[in-house]
Length: 109
Image (cartoon, rainbow, N blue to C red):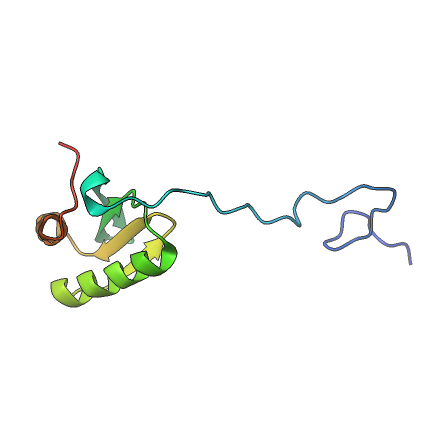
């Protein structure tokens, strides 16, 4: 049986490479202190539920995970980390803003 050249992991030979094998490189972002952040809040409706989104954060992944864990515990809600944004379950933009401002993060007007 003839092998399909466009199959995942196929050997294309002669210096050819499949471009879908390379993972996108992480953006090398500089880390900023809380005072230098300019965050903004957004709300989205997903599957009939409201999600509060805060972004963009300029922190290391580990520090961002720690921040998310702290905020989830303080606000008493669930949440997740997606790229450089924190997503919280529920319509709670004012509580998120207050908590982050107490940590010296700044927001766009």
